[in-house]
Amino acid sequence: MSILLPDNIEKVAADALENTAKPLSINVGQTIADLWYLVFGGISFSAEKRKLRYSAELKKFKEEVEAKCKSVPENELKEPDTQIAGLALEKSKFCVENETLRSMFSSLIASSMRKDKENIMHPSYAEIITQMSSDDAKALLSFENSEGMPIQNFRLIIDNGYLSLFENVWKPCHSIEELEQCRITIDSLSRLGLVNISYSEAFKQDEQYDELSNSEICGVLNAYVDSKYKFYLDTQAKEHRIVKLKGVVSLTGFGKNFLSCVV
Image 1 (tube, rainbow, N blue to C red):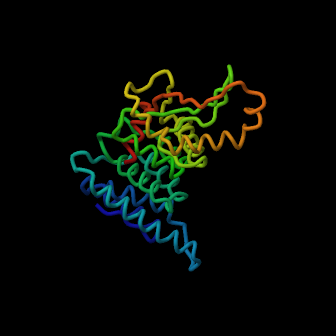
Image 2: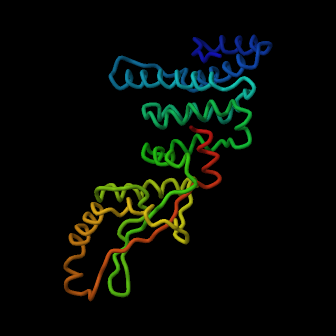
Image 3: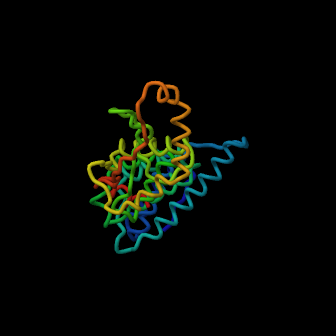
């Protein structure tokens, strides 16, 4: 099976008619090639650095798509859903320079050709990838072999009240910027319906949370509190302390299906 970029639309039409009598693998490959032409066929590249770079990344994407499509077992091969494959190609042109997202798109295209993925495929997957950052995608991939991961909120208790410092910390952090990025990433995945966040449950083993609140990050948190709240805490508060609220973050059913189709 090969994915080729045709020279003109007349050739696309002629090949489509000719391939109706050929084995399914050839027809499947031609369908992806046709969609490729419809999405990328009108793009022209000049010698400018940016366009040359895009052209090089686009070539890598084509090679990745072709390799993953070829890897689909013959007994699992089916005609790709043109809505899903077409949307994936259309949306991918804005992400081909991002290696992680590009890989997700090429896997999604290959998954659209698999019988065993047919019942879990959805047209929204392509749009979801375009709304993800590289950090979002890498975070989601870390859930591939996990039923759930520990997550924490850090709070500043002041007398009988509290302030939320940093929420949804799911990996070891070494700076305020990393703590904030943790929240943004998990909030993004939650907004997309891919993960579920729960603080009504937690892992029984406390050591699973130890990495999330090691001595380094405790020092960062104390310095942050001193820089923002020191005057108030010294003059108004009777007591204060930093506490952590334990929880679990896990893939939703939709998230599991999505991940299965993009890796």
